Length: 217
Ligand SMILES: [Zn+2]
Image (cartoon, rainbow, N blue to C red; front, top):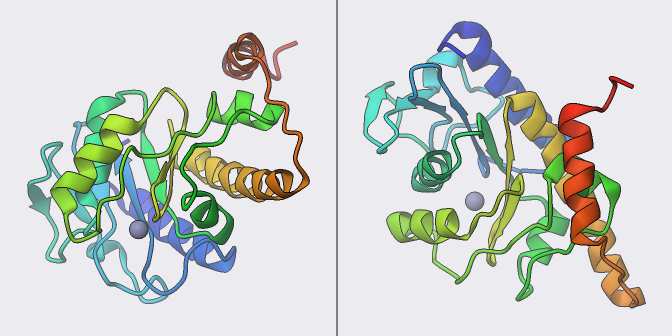
């Protein structure tokens, strides 16, 4: 996708949607989109979503250098760049501070595949980053998170919150909903006991069905 006013508005609309859904508050959370030229359009640091304008967004090179924009990019830019560089299939990333996923991120393990939605839309279990890194250690946080991602379309940043991925911004938005719902279900299941995850073969089958057959037969 090219850097254009419509895309920038779509990013801002998504920020406001996250806030309306209770998935972020204040200026927490951030969004990036991979552009056709390989650079990354990303939200700025500390700009309120209600007053954010298309000009506030920033363009970064894949190595994190700022190419366009007068604002400072989000302080979590290294995570976005690191994940984009590791996974060429990802076109958009949404980082939210949603309550159930943040609660799940305070545990010591990721989330097994417990629903068809996870198979098809996330493509597998949700991993958790390997160690806690304080948010002010931007570069190390980016390394640890990007080294902890799998082929699944989400990760829990340990003691922090989730990042949700998609080929498009629309897909990443759906992932946000699936991740928050999954974490809510999982935390309830932990209290109830007796979790039975879906077998790996069916996880792969579900993802393949969604990508190649869903809506076609
Ligand atoms: Zn954050």
